[in-house]
Each structure stands twice: as structure tokens, then as C-alpha cells.
Image (tube, rainbow, N blue to C red; front, side, top):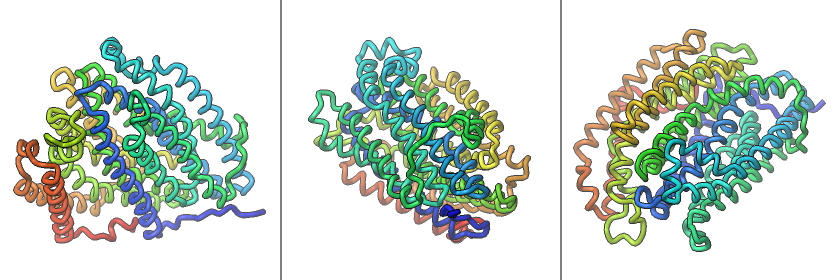
Length: 536
């Protein structure tokens, strides 16, 4: 009987998990940079508060992405990878192939049905996402435009969800490059659509919608060569009673909620923002895009490589290795996440002005006015406080899923969502869209605290001396970075009059000075590059 190409992760393989995290983080970083370029193009083509087209497109695009992150990237991976790891460690080649084929067949059938229903009932979905403000969306044309865009884009849910399934298979075999590259494809497709395709449509937002579908097809096909090399590109098979599949589905239900609490909080925020003035949805969208850069590069990369590793460590009974991997992930999240959060907070206006606002006389992009800059910047500051907690949620949650425990994180996620709703409702009438951003941050802090406490009670994580030391060291380095930026940064009021090139140069100087200060001071107080390579 042939052995399948398993690549066990040794507990002490520091270079292994560190290098895999670097691959995922680098490609995710490339994707996030392209995503920022895409967002810059969106701000020029769609605007923000000046025209309803931006709100309509971002809401329509958010619907399939919400369901995709809810089921595919979040819950599906958390339920699928631990079971697949079990087959890798104790099963036969035939059992593993059968499990993958059945999951592909069953998942494919469900996605096909969901995509058809989603396209047919697109107006109803837009109504759900704009509950409480649907009449105003109908009156200014945003409702019909968003519904039409959603009809085109909803099948992307099926394409990218199945792509995420294939990516989970590859990740379990330590093939991280191909899955990590797929967001690049979407960003390139949308940028090309805005550069070359908007003249083909009476409503330019439809160029972006069709680009999303084309990207989904390419993303799916991108995985096939790697699956062929693993001999896992097999014809899907429908079997609802396969023991491995039923085991996965028992984990899947609670994981839908627990792994995707961030998306549920975004949904709540979107619904409330839709009831505010035109532009509120867009302001939060642009601020969230900036937050996604560090969260995607660091937290998602760590989550991607940690979950398969600790799932296998748990199956082997290596509790010490399990703890060391979670501790290492938390330290990396703090070392890289805290300076990112501080930088986003301090440079919120320079970042927003440089990326999205075009000075007077600039040939395009005048839809994003200075008022939009101020609205996005203040939301960005509120989001930035929650960057590290958001990262820790991504790092701590796999500690439960690897042990096939989805009920505990489900409970914690429920509390987080409740906190988000309560704080949003308390604040949005007073500070509008900023209250929604603050609620998201508060919910992330509560969620991370609950997950960490739960892991500590089970003995899977502890606040060790090394973690405390890292927190002190990074805090000192960040404080020095803030002092340097404070003295170098021009007043926010001056950025409105800067030319485009002046903004770019100033922003590069500030970002460079901040990074150099952080790393120099960090080295001086004891931070070392080897801390990023893997657990001790």
C-alpha cells in the first residue's frame, strides 16, 4: 500500500514553521499591498461619500465575502484540517483519498445550491444587509445597483469557497505557496478592470463585478497542478454518511460562528452604518482595508501554519510542543502587531490622505474629498487599537480547533458578538461610524481575553516570563517610535495642501523612520530576529 506524501512537523523544527510562516506572510503581504493599490483605484473610480456608487458596490461585494469567510476560510478550515490531520497521522492512503473526494462532492453540491439561491434572492439579501435603512437606499438608487451587482458577484462565493477547501488540503501537506498566492489574483483582476474595463459598461461598477468572477475561476484552477502532484485531484463523490465527513460536520456547526466572529461583527457594523449618512459604509470599508494589511500579513499567516502543526502535535500527544507553538505565535503577533497598530494610529491621516485623496488639479480621483479623509482617519484610529487583539484571536482560536473543540470558542464568540452589538447601539447615535469602529475593537479585546483565559485554564497556554518580557520590550520600542514620529510628522491640516509627490515622500520618510526606530530600539532592549523563526 502506497504511503501518501505526508510531511510530519517535528516539535523542535523552528526553521520549518518559521520559514513556512514567512512564505505565507510574504505572499499575504504582497496581496495586501496590491489590495491597497486596488483600494486606491477604487477610491478614484468609485469615490466614497460623494456618490452612492461606492456604497452600493462595497455592500454587494461584502455579501459573498461575508458568507465566504463565515463558512469557507473560517469554520470550514477549522473543522476540516484537524480531521484531515487525523487521517494523515493514522489513516491509509485510500481512506485519506476517500475523505477528500467526499468532502469535495458534498461541499460542491451545497455551494451550487447556495449560489443559485443567492443570485435569485439578491434583493432580499441586500434588504437584510441594509435593514432599517432600505427605504433610503431605494430612494437614491443604491438598492437597485447593489442588487444587480450582487446577482453578478454572488457565484464568487462558490468559486472561492471551493478554492479555500483545496487550499486547506494543500496547507495540511505544508504546501503553503499556492493557497497564499490566490488573493493576489483577485487584486490584479480588479485593478485591471478599473484600468481597462470600466469603459465597456454603462455603470463602471459592473466591470469590477465581472472581474471578481473571472478571478474566482482562475483562483480555483490555480490549485490543480499542486493537487495533481499530491495525487489528490480526484473526481468528487457525494456520500453524506462517511464517518470522517460526519465527524467534520459535528465540528463545523459551532465553528461557523466561532471562527467567523469578525465577519459577524462586520455585518452588524455594515447594517448600522447603512442607516447613517451616505459614505458611512465606504468610510468604514477604507479604514478596514488598511487594518487588513497587518492582520493579513501576520495573524492570518500565523493561523495558517499553526493550525496544521498543532493538530498533528495533538494527535501525537505532544502537549509541550502544542504549548510552545501557541506561545511562539502570541509572541510573534505582539512583536510585529504592536508597532503596526501604533503606526496606523499615529499616521492615520497621512496614510488616508496619501492613498485615497487627490489634491486639487489632479487628473482623477476627486470623488474622495478631504471630508472623506477625516472620516476614514478617525475610524482607522479606532480600528488600530484592536489590531493586536484581532491578531491574538487568530492565533489562540486554533488552540481549541486543533483539539476538535468548537463549543468553547462558539461560546466566547457569542459573547464577543453581543458586546459588539451593545457597544455599537450605544455609540453610533453619538459618534456615528466611529462608534461602530470602536465597538469592533472592544469586541476583539473581549474575544482575545476569553480565548486566552480558556487556553490557560486547560493548560494549553501560559503567560510566561518570555511573553511578559516581549510585551515590555515592544512597548519601549513603540514608545520611542511614537516620539520620533511626533517630532517628524507635519500637522494633519497641512496634508490637504501638499502635492501628491510631497505626500508620498513624507509618508515614506515617516514609515521608514518609524520602522528604523522600532527595530533599532528593539534590538537595544533585547528583541532578536530568532524569536520570529519558531518555538524554542
